[in-house]
Length: 371
Ligand code: NAD
Ligand code: DAU
Image (cartoon, rainbow, N blue to C red; front, top):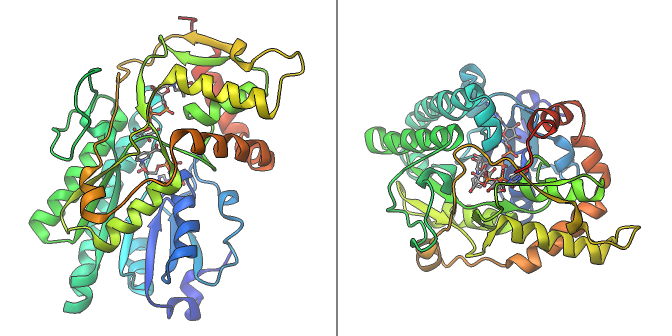
């Protein structure tokens, strides 16, 4: 791995953006898509927590427009140096603790990273922004990647979340993301930092860490383990293929109104049980069980997630009408691609399902009661 700070040729590359959390699920897809579609160079600043994996970026690691820096978005001396030496025209902030179940189990890291470290990042970016020339200041953007979970939970007949929906976060994760959204908003209102915020629904696709529903179900099915559906499986999520989220972020960065928030979602509402059944059907077709039975036989209803939000749904009208964004994948095309990707990338799976992952699976599922 190159050292950005001693790499004079790379530092001269302009324009440049910094992506934080680029070794995670969405961030790694974003970095890959960005390098293919845009001209700017990219510095990926990632702490490499359990969720960050450089194996997700092996295909771009030799790209001359890409560099990785291991570090924390809360490390202010590092940020000050990185910003001054690379002079980015934009920051895209993915870095966060992202798993709801982990936040229920232990919220401390969520408060630290999603709130305190985001504050530290905003402070350093504010100082850097103030030093730019008027033209650079005008062009600069800080894009904060957030979630639909800040809006709380919908009833079955409620309209989908619009940007005007009030914030009603229900888990330590969503409360910490809501706090970070408020900080980002305040830095625009108070200090005129040119910010943009995106609030997206559930993503799925390649490089998704297998603690989350879709990859967990694919891998458990293949391993002959139970498929643990929380409660009655009737909770609804609005699924978006990850590259559609990445395209939306690029559009908001390019054309979004400063200070505005944009909801991102694919209008693909499904119950969890439906999602798990679709995965089982695809696996029955693509990798049938040796005994000829359906993978659906492995489904087991287990104790519900405490405070489990019933339904999320996104109204993406602003993004569609103002910026012309459309999702390229629907759930049927996206989930097929996803299952095929996991079947074809068992080496990546092996590399992320090591010690820490096994500890989590044991803590979360081993003694979980059957519902
Ligand atoms: P992820 O958990 O897969 O990845 C998070 C990345 O951030 C990891 O690479 C991790 O190492 C890094 N990171 C964590 N703390 C850090 C710190 N203090 N400094 C630097 N890097 C740090 O998460 P994801 O699913 O890719 O989500 C990315 C962002 O998108 C998050 O902010 C999340 O809230 C948001 N989001 C996710 C979804 C989804 O469905 N996954 C939907 C909407 C919004
Ligand atoms: O809505 C956006 C959010 O989507 C993001 O902000 C989060 O970072 C992301 O993790 C995701 O949160 P969810 O809690 O919706 O995702 P998860 O994959 O953990 O769970 C999806 C649904 O499946 C949820 O209703 C809980 C259920 N579930 C999950 C797991 C891991 C199960 O039934 N069994 C499981 O084992």
